[in-house]
Image 1 (cartoon, rainbow, N blue to C red):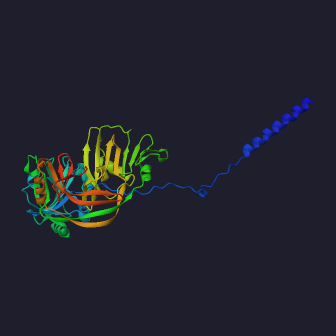
Image 2: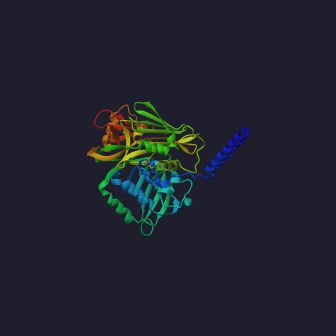
Image 3: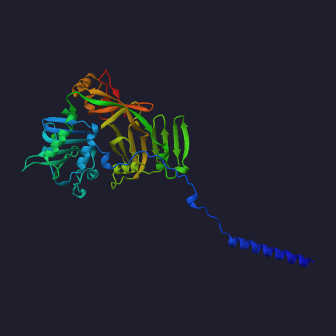
Length: 450
């Protein structure tokens, strides 16, 4: 009897095992059709646009020379970008080293067009700005702060020579331009006639041993007008910066640092949002500094980084370059209708984008997270001539004129909630790099936050 029970149990186990084996072997899983699944992809809002290197370099002023008569072409109405685009299309051919007599010194007169740059053009940028074979450029052609289209009537017929000048290195190179005639150059003068202001040459604290390479500045000799603007602003999407600046946005943690400040981090990168100032501060603490490679310029690295998230908004041009032992920094300054912003009722980061490079990579990134939307108000402001500026500086007994490096017109930026106002003013740059706003309507000067 017991044997029969054992036999039945054994057969039951065998049949059960065979049944389970059949189920396993014959199992066909059901796969969902990917086309039938509704997947919500997270698409970040656009921040701005991409730009090329020649689109972020602009002269601080363009001048027309007609012997002793010199006129400043105001940068308004997009004149300077148009000039730079025109230059980029000129084909530079044969070149030769020029003499110091060709430099625009205080006593030198010429016929032509002069572009003056506040941040000197580096050797590696030249091929981005001009149509020239970089292999023919001499190594010593660097730190270019003046570009002159010179009318040359010395030979048979008439032609235009392009001069690249470095007052710091005291070098001049002349390039032949077969594609440009004097008639075409003079036509450019006529097209900008409405925006020309008479100026005169000045020398400020020049220490050059050669009079031909003096640091000449140009200042208006008569009053002129500029626009005051009020813009409505639009906030840039923070989520787009998180997706662009962090490797894996899903693992980014948010930590409130106060009522108006937030911090985002993934353990390797950190981004701080100062909402009250509409500023972003991005750092990569893990980037270790090392000797800077010259293979890729800082400008190229910075432009590529910002292009990586289409981060260009409004009118930003290269401002300053600073070189340190194991890192370097570059800044881009906001311009309004071609005029630079030199001061604000907020911090300097409110109108600049600053990037630091360490170990060949961008390690810091500071910028405003708003952009100008639409102009809601315009007014005309009459700017006093340089003679009134001279009088104002003389009245300030505490002000040391020997420290003055430059005198320029710029905008002062005032933030009012979602609106910003840009009012033109005279500014003085001192040896410490600070731009000081002159209040021509009172007996005291106000310092622009720099």
